[in-house]
Length: 480
Ligand SMILES: Cc1cc2nc3c(=O)[nH]c(=O)nc-3n(C[C@H](O)[C@H](O)[C@H](O)COP(=O)(O)OP(=O)(O)OC[C@H]3O[C@@H](n4cnc5c(N)ncnc54)[C@H](O)[C@@H]3O)c2cc1C
Ligand SMILES: C=Cc1c2[nH]c(c1C)Cc1[nH]c(c(CCC(=O)O)c1C)Cc1[nH]c(c(C)c1CCC(=O)O)Cc1[nH]c(c(C)c1C=C)C2
Image: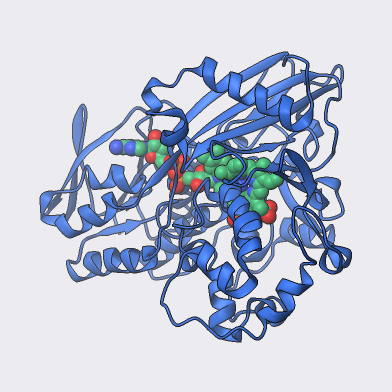
């Protein structure tokens, strides 16, 4: 393989570039990013007084093959010393809340959570979990998450817990999201074991083999539930960028928006604002809609399927308060759509990551997330929503939900347009069909990033690795 162009410099595009760079089989890699910075949604503000605020992801899970893979990369990049782990025994792992009927309720956990009635639920969880093992296997090839959970565990769990969970991961509506694509573990448990409970106890089949490197071994030994980095999540894309620059094998271009791509004799011609380049293969790490708008008309069915992948807009409001203002301690709270459509949840950032607080003086950082699948209904078109309105709504939520009457000493409002893809029912078929089209037409094109195979940072990094392995027909030797 001579030249590979990677479109998009979010964590997906950077990860693909990193794995390509590790391979001796590729002579040139060109990474094209439209904005002035790499990292995409991995974006942190580092204030001059030392405080750190996350505008995108704030915690990465170390568990599973994809979690190990990311930690192996982090180790290889020399970032191990910057890790901020949160263990399973930490209060941020134990305590998560739901805001229901104008009150905070700690989500049930452990044996007592199973056996006792814990509000807002009307009966012990055991009464939903035990009969689940006897529920017949569903016959549909895909189903909404709400329908799947109602069928197996009952409507109350689906309406409150699962509705909230989907808002806290996809900012999405569990009545539309696909169980097969969003929570493949649940779907596979039913398929392989006939029950989610049994699947959780016995396992749901083979996983990717990713041996744990030293950092991943440490995460297992120390029982990490999630981790961040001392200078914020953006250190990860920054560190990959630095690695790629130092390798001398990757050309990184900022402010290089891809306008159009057209097939050429040996691969692709890529049209940029101020010139053209050629590549033998393209790895697209663009959001699906952005890719659809640059493909040639000859790719028509693919263009339509890419356009059909919806996204949602999320308003992220970071707030800093003087003093210790939280009435409860934990990771944060989620709000089910029946309680308040527009307010998704509040993360108590200072609890899992106090290291990101301003070093001098006691402060509390929280992040309020709003909108998602309900954005337009509640706030109207994103173009017309003002920062003032979002800030007012966020501080009002902190006041009502947490009883905080003081005014924040610092605030930042970010409107993330189209930031989280929504895997609706049938998503897996659409992705399968897009990849079949590419194969049948011998298009030298790989699809990676959050639009296809999982939205978490781990999933996106792993999609970059998988694409490079498939392209080169080899396993990548990347700090494993
Ligand atoms: C608010 C929020 C909170 C999140 N929290 C978590 C969390 O706690 N844990 C977790 O694991 N995940 C979390 N995620 C998900 C995760 O951050 C994203 O799914 C992931 O960062 C997406 O990476 P990506 O590279 O696929 O896409 P992106 O980050 O969208 O990158 C795509 C890049 O392509 C560029 N681009 C677009 N068009 C063009 C073009 N024409 N030419 C060139 N470049 C172009 C864009 O500028 C962008 O940089 C969160 C996401 C959000 C929005
Ligand atoms: C309220 C909105 C959101 C919050 N976080 C996100 C949104 C939209 C985005 C997000 N959060 C997580 C992921 C990655 C999923 C993964 O597979 O790792 C994404 C894209 C992590 C996460 N956050 C919550 C859960 C249950 C998870 C899954 C992993 C885990 O169990 O740690 C819950 C949660 N998210 C938010 C809050 C306030 C909250 C619960 C109190 C914010």
